[in-house]
Amino acid sequence: MPIEKNKVVSFHYKLIEGDSELEQSHDGDPMSFLFGHGGIMSGLEESMAGRDSGDHFSVTVPPEKAYGYRSPDAVQRIPIKHFGARNRKLKRGDVVPLQTSQGPLDVTILKVGKFMADVDANHPLAGRTLTFDIDIVDVRDATEEEIAHGHAHGPGGHDH
View 1 (cartoon, rainbow, N blue to C red):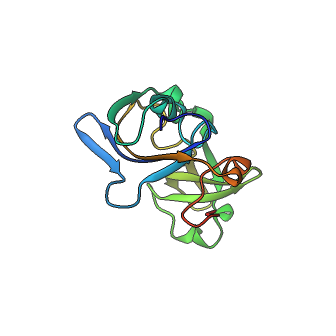
View 2: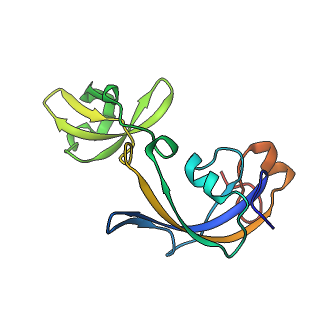
View 3: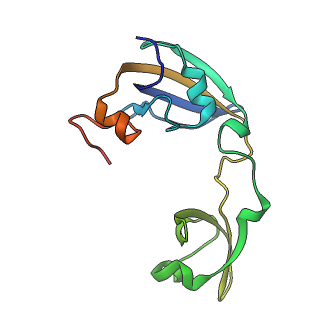
């Protein structure tokens, strides 16, 4: 069954940059998403169109079709009090949630002062060209409920 809109695709991946493996999914359950609904980065989704269960391929995804380019505006100085109870334990390199007017956002701590912290809200892989090794595990028709919700559900139904 070829991958097309309203199919649920399950796949394993290996994310590689240069000679380094950054992450992979083969130690756990495959990733699943509803094709054609923007549930994964556009470059990865586009590379799966027309493929089928059992296919293995590699794809290189440029920043504009992955996590976008780094934005200098995403680096800001935030009062430490906005980090709640965690504020006394913050250190450089920590990735922590920050409540914003658009909801929670993970930020990376760049520098911590007495009252302020410099943070980077860019995705850690923003601005990078990413290479994925993909193994398509399964392709199936989506249920009416999955299509209505715009995403795949786990075994047995609703999985949010």
